[in-house]
Image (tube, rainbow, N blue to C red):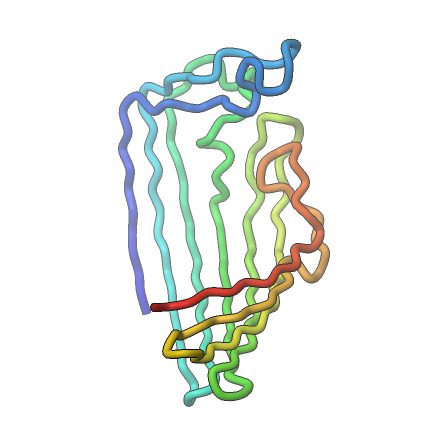
Length: 180
């Protein structure tokens, strides 16, 4: 079990409006890309629990609650990227790993992100994604190797982490690594 609280109190927080920075999308788009927020506070709590059942099953659950308070500048409505409002209040992550054979793990994970404000249109909806993967560790010529295959967002959830930018329906991947 793990619990952590956090509190950031920032004076002169620079809000990077880089999505519409001059020249980024052509000459007809853009504005000044940096804005100052005189005072910004971010605070919250993180809770995490992990369990091992025998040698074959492991699970982890994590929850984050965060809140912010920021001085108003009068320009927020015109910004396309206002970091304080893009932060979700609630996030949950779940991970389960099952040892299917020696040094081979099947993984199932899920992520929930709560709704949040958006400067580019309506509020962003909350979403849940589910990922699945398999990992195999082995030794070859004295070097420890890891090979894994995964599919992220196996349910094909439509979601946006940033307003106006659709995330891919599915992400397939192979990954190889070594430890010397």
